[in-house]
Length: 499
Image (tube, rainbow, N blue to C red; front, side, top):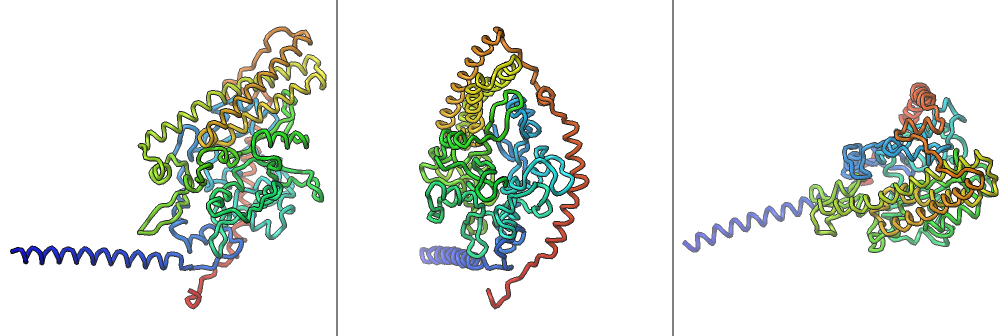
């Protein structure tokens, strides 16, 4: 009886070992053929679907970026009308494009659609028309490095946004970050390389782990358009203001010393700075960066399918993928981790909104001072205070994940902004008294986006009509030209002898 039981157990064990060996062999076989190329990818191939023929798992996860269903406390992939949520921003950006339209982007997959649809790019009727330069395309598509290679860097930046609309049709994807031959991460936007050079650093010495953040830093940074670059004066050359460092004060000093401003505020006449999205700069001041955690570790964590481990190219909030992102290191429950994030964001928001209130009042009080006959000399220090306070507010607000990535630094920046804004208002109160105005300046009704836009004098009907005409007339021409061009592009299969 014992021998019979031993025989049966032996058969079962041998059977299970056979299954295990078969599974291992199959997984090794999958690994062996995972990256067998199907097509030859050219140096500047912008079409993501071509890359997908060689890297189907990564491409299938990339396609999931089309999902816009996830919303978090202050982010996610759902498009949100920021001006509708917070009409004060219309006044803060008076005289600048963000007062017309400020929607939270839906992610890389919709980068081209979103920039075409925003009112900030206007309603151009053809080449040479519209309010924005060609530089505004820089971070939107893998067609950009292709064009920079064909035209030249400065030549790409020169001209209007509408000049190259037919050339840029592929959303942010593979060629933006990868070398087609080795698949190593690479920098395709020269502004980042130039910024490292300005700081005396060699970006070629970056480690692979550092590159898993630097490819993001090509675009998720503060930048400006330098129209005074020697030899190409007048060209809006994309530049990162990192020469003095990446802190809010270092970049402020950089801008102040060169007397740069993005625009002059319509109401206060202050020379304003618009923080773009200094996500990389604020990330570097946080604990995750200090521990060597890269952007990709959380926003593009590894995943496994069919026994294959690969990087998930569904770029999304870690809060929508807690198991593969946060819980790789943190053992707390998912709900607890989300709550921790939201608590930090809510607390940062409290001070951000307080600073917004002070800034709105500062702009309107400054406008009143001008109305009463204030001189430029009387207003000079006040306008600098408004500039510096709003720069700190925008630095914290526009670096969208800053209140989580670096809550301590974000609190410090907002605290500094509150202090400077208060100083501006004290100076304004004294000046207004000198000018014979000893009462509170009345504030307008800006309870809604529409009321705020009406207050600053925007003709929204005209702007919307111009955009619709662009989408009806010029955009279809762009798409037609792009299709004709891409239909001529080859998809060259790899011969069996090369495999």
